[in-house]
Structures are given as structure tokens and as C-alpha cells.
Amino acid sequence: MSAAFAKGTVWLVGAGPGDPDLLTRKAERLIATADIVFHDALVGPGVLALVPPSVELVSVGKRSGRHSKDQRTIDALIVEAALVGRRVVRLKGGDPSIFGRSSEELEACHAAGVPVHICPGITAASAAAADLGLSLTLRGTARRLTFVTAHTKRGGVPPLDWAALADPQATLAVYMGKAAAPHVSAGLIAAGLAPDTPVALVENASLPKGSQFRTRLDLLPIAAKTADPAGLVVIASRSHRDAETDAYLDTLNITSLTSAGSSLKFCVIAMGEADIYPRFGPTMEWDTAAGHAVLAAAGGSVKTLDGVDLTYGKSGFCNPKFIAWGCRS
Picture (cartoon, rainbow, N blue to C red):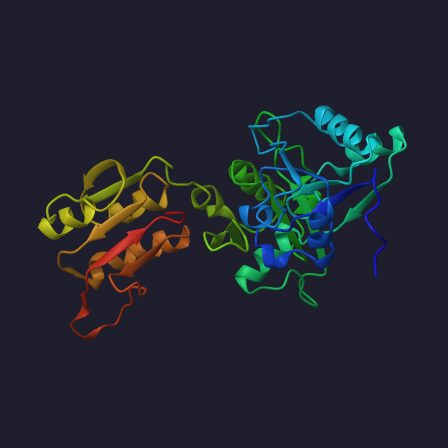
């Protein structure tokens, strides 16, 4: 049994990847008995819903590019609250000790004579592996696990030792790596890692809105491109667009709509220049196979209207109606 949460004490608590069911029992107990909780933007709403109404809840931001408070201000806030006798929880996404800037807050508390402790949480890499149904290590193949962050203050090339990271016998978990995907791909390949090295990308691990897909290292820059939050970029058939297609397009939030011929539409999506290609008119397997292969290699998919993967070798070789999707659509 853990000791009681003493007044004037700070706990750095890991909120896990987002799913409140993945909180540790200790974390939930600390949240429930705190007087004040300072939380990051990455802490999921399901976790924040566990904070009792009687507990003061303070957002301190810290999402990439949109920090509501700088680190020194956060340090001062948690120390000030503890010095007046409050039970302080500093709630951080994932595990506080993994890219959570815990060192600064620990040092601030120690300098002020404030008792401070850490309650670990499940880190994003573990949740991502669970979503993918994969192990982060594998006897004889992946004997080492390395965590790195690709986040930089102003973007640009992450200051990483690519030669040390390009180890085919290790699993590399890159945090906050979406914007830096071209640099990660180029750096690892230049350092000797095979271009066809398998890569899995996960967003919002552990959450219902999460997405996962698999690609290869040389295609990572394409796969990491995301659809515009304002709407989808749609590409449609130039000569076979029909009323059914138009009716379907009316149901979408579309930023732009362009037309193209032949199987180039699959390639445009694979390059990240469009998000979706609906095709409700007739096609044959030989019309789609090559483009489908390119799109699948880039992390996209082609589904029938029933949500089933488009397959080949069908009787008569005719394709059903389908929708081609980009890797993040």
C-alpha cells in the first residue's frame, strides 16, 4: 500500500497514451486525492474526466508549436502550489520520464525543498505496439529498443545520430516524428538501413480515433502526409464520372476536386497529393492492379463499398465499385 498523499507534495503522474483504462491504479488514486492538477494538452479527455469536480484543473498546454505556458512558468506554478500546502499532481501524457521534461520540474521542486515523486505511465510506443498487435522486441531479431524524439523547436532536421540508430537488429521508436518523416527516412537510409525496412505509423494510440498502417522506410515521407483538416482532396475519373459518384461526393467534406485519367489517380494519392478516389463505374482488374500496388506500398488502401479490400483473380476479372484511400484519410 502506498503512503498517503501528503500536503505540500508534488507527484509527476503519467496519464498514459489516452485511454483512461490504461491508467495505473496509483495514478487514478493520486488524481482523486489531489487538490490541484496541472495537465498537458496531450492528456486525453477520458483521463481528465476522472478528476473530481472539487479538484482545481489547470491546463498548461505544451502541445507541439502551441505552448500556453513556458517550462519555467510551469515549474513556478507547481512549486508555488506545493509551498502553500496543496497536494499537486502534474499530469503528463504517456510516461513522465520519457520525453516529458520531468527533469526540469524535479530540479525546481528539489531547489525549493518540495517533496516530489514520480508515478510512471504507459508510454506511447507500448500502446502503439499493442494497437498493431506487435512486440517491440523479438529474440534473435530485435534485441534492442531505442526511443528517440524527432521534435525540434523550429522544425528542420532532428539532431540525431543516424549511424547509431540505423541498426537492423533494433526496434526504433520515433516520437513526434510525423513532420520529420522525410529526414528520418533519408537519415536512416543514408546511414545504411535498408530502404525496404518495415515501418509502422500510429496516431492516437489506444484511442477509438486512432489510426495504424504499415509501409517501408523509403516510402515513409509519402505515408506520413496527412489529409488537410479542412477537408479532403478528391481525385475522380475524367471520363467515367457518373451521378452515383457525384451523390457520394456530396456526402464528403471536400477541399478540392480534380480529374485525371487511367491509373494515375492511384499514384496521385500515393504521392500524398490527394486523399480519396471513388470509382463506381466499371473497371477490369488490369486497369487497377498496377496503381493499386503503388498505393498499397505507400500505405494506402482500396476498398469495396462493403469495406472489404479489393482483391484480384475474380471470375470474369471485373472489379466491383471501390474507393481508393490515402494512408491517412
